[in-house]
Amino acid sequence: MNRLLRITRITASIVFFLVITAALTAAPLAVPVVAQWTEKIQFLPAVMTFSLFIFISWLIITLVFGRVYCSTVCPMGTLQDITACIRLRLKPRDYRYTAPANNVRYITVFIVLGCLMAGVFAVPSIIDPYTAYMRMCNDILAPVYGFLTGSAAEPPAHMAWQHNVAVKAMTGWTGTSIAIITAAIVAGFSARRGRIICNTVCPVGTTLGFIARFSIFQIDIDTDKCTNCRRCEYVCKSCCIDMNDHVVDGSRCVNCFNCINVCPDDAIRYTSRRKQLSIPMMQSLKDLKRVPETTLDSGKPATCEKSKHNDK
Ligand code: SF4
Ligand code: SF4
Ligand code: SF4
Image (cartoon, rainbow, N blue to C red):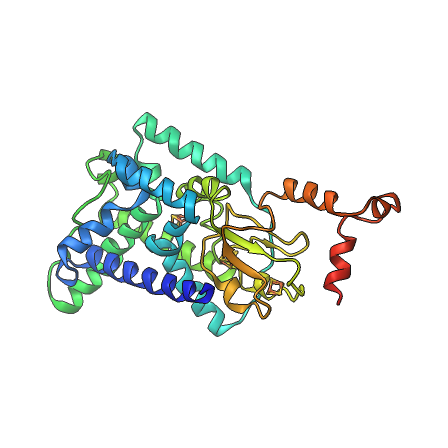
């Protein structure tokens, strides 16, 4: 069941990616109604157009299931997965847990919020993943499509801040240059560091991640079954599985389910009945309660009991 989740997730992300790319590259390639629908459910454009229903729906979905938006609907997320996958085929690499760059994450969100409230749309339009992806399709893929088919490149049907003067100025060579630079940055970072952009500079990822750490369904490690082989950590493109403490940072997990797929002991699951808490501070308190007082008195670290188990 857990492994079926990964196949479903990959299928959904590919469908969304192809439909959105087709819609943004050339209108004749996509069914208009479906294309409009996939655009309307994008997070930040929904905020910009005051689509309260879409905005609240994503908050509720994230609170229940985690960052499903990032694993299926966002085309920039799927683009990063594709480049990371290509890099893996050429040169395999193992991911390792890294501490979250919370300062960068929250500063970016505050900058974007400040710009939106001040009516400065140029900065958010560069950072917003959907608008950035739209620019790539519109300024890179569409001209190529037009050249190959002999037709004129068509502008995107909808853009949350297209009426803004500063954004309108980003056309022609300016728009193409921004699109190429964005594509190069995304490809370069995702090939080397997986979802590093998602978990540092993306304001949508930070916002949804803040909610996802409290979501009902989360990735959880069963320490009774775990043999500490670290395979899950090596395939986690969000670098959010901390095998030293056996915790998963729910705010950075993008629900890709790669970890579940590789675990030989069925010890890591997507579940609502978690054994581990996703907040490291609470996890430490929980561990301390588990360890017998004699262990604490002897001065051994609180993780001794777990290590003994994992050495079996
Ligand atoms: S974190 Fe941002 S760029 Fe990454 S998948 Fe989510 S919305 Fe898209
Ligand atoms: S913990 Fe990592 S590998 Fe597992 S679902 Fe989350 S992001 Fe994917
Ligand atoms: S892959 Fe499974 S057994 Fe191996 S470290 Fe991860 S949870 Fe534990």
